[in-house]
Image (cartoon, rainbow, N blue to C red; front, side, top):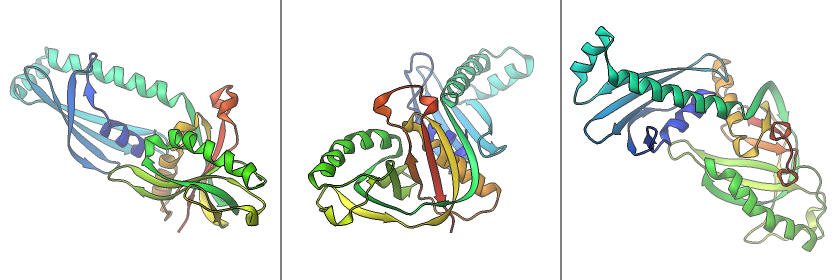
Length: 265
């Protein structure tokens, strides 16, 4: 996973431990680089200091410091003598967390293609605002409105569904985006409060090919951001996605394909 993906994964953690009853408070962050969390438990509390360093666009080295707030000196001495139950306990939690991340990353594949071009696309779409993690559910909700508008307006669908992100707020991790279908007959489209006609011009971009459930296709965004950083390429963080499979037909999710682009400035 790229650093940006891990950053938000940790920022969104609400609890810690097997029972999930140890609440988490984010104390400090450095975007895509660091997350400091306070974890409260019944008799004490501790601080997790996570740091991320990219090895490449999809592999990240994670280091984490763990400090007990009430017993920090005692625990440091126990670490030196190899007798710290505190450290052993949270090592086990880290291993479990790591295993969850491995299971998650095995559910999709991202391949960086490098510099490419976003194709010119004319499409009918609906505009939405959501948390990044809600992108897929918003797409499903919009499907019914779009499919109804196509026969009603005698629109001929020309190609695969697309998403165009118009704004991505990193602080709140929320996005504003169009979700729609390429069309041939612009004149038949009647714009209203739900659907509109839009155009994506041909534009130089970084491209990745994604395979997996489309709810996780934004993992390719983070891989492309890191690829751009490593290769000193200035980009616009406004992803454009093309989806080639119909999730309603099921099948092996690792065969679902999407092309993901980040425009080059």
